[in-house]
Length: 111
Image (cartoon, rainbow, N blue to C red; front, top):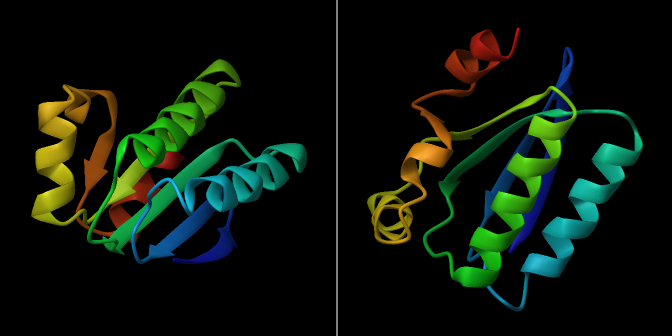
């Protein structure tokens, strides 16, 4: 898995390439903690290149969402693959996350 971050305005775009699973969830959690330590609470996860997620990965996304919500921020997922949407449906978390088809659309909703 690879993680890229880019700040746009008051939002941080987090791009994930590869599987978000038990072996990689800790790396994303550390990235998130660094972002939160810098006072950024608007997150956009571009996960179009993320083909797989397991319960550890879902746990990190839930952690991110609950943290930003407590701080008055927003979090969204951009362009998830169908396999990711199925996992979110099965875990009954699809409605928990805002899902957009582009980073620009998600950025507009952050403001």
